Image (cartoon, rainbow, N blue to C red; front, side, top):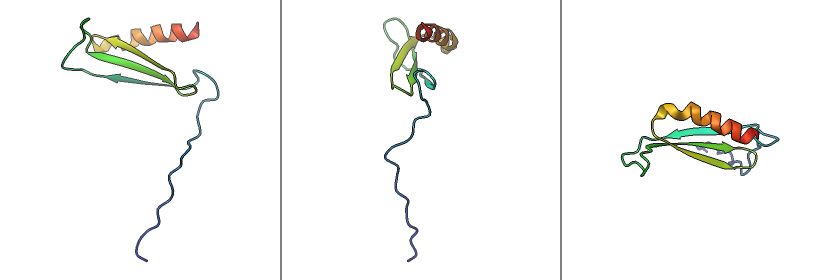
Length: 78
């Protein structure tokens, strides 16, 4: 009697995008202590919400993120 009932978790969440590349999520991860052979310490990921396609780019310093975004944008626009 003193417990509050819990609502069920939704098993399906509606998508916010109705077509490809309408909503793209991005994340920058790093710095890692160990770097790659090329000297990369970070990576940037882009995920399309509609088809769950993933693009990953390795970068050395964190300030290369905008340049990588421009490359990604030109890639997906073509």
